[in-house]
Image (cartoon, rainbow, N blue to C red; front, side, top):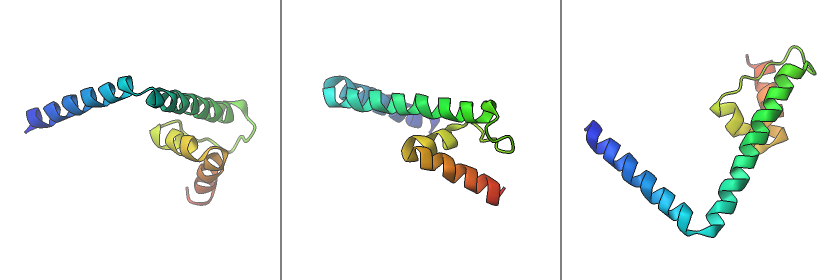
Length: 87
């Protein structure tokens, strides 16, 4: 069963790469996503280690970075609010 899942993963990854290489529009999307991902990680890093809000520490993991990539600055406020009021 693991072999079947591995084969499906490899084939789907190769097809995705083929689609990205074929369409030029896909490259602009990938480039924009990579820029947003990098900026989100950098903002979270600066927020954590600059000392602007000493009582606030937002861990840098895929969930928090993904939230910030999708929502932007309101995503940072959302994570900070959830951490402050729930955690």
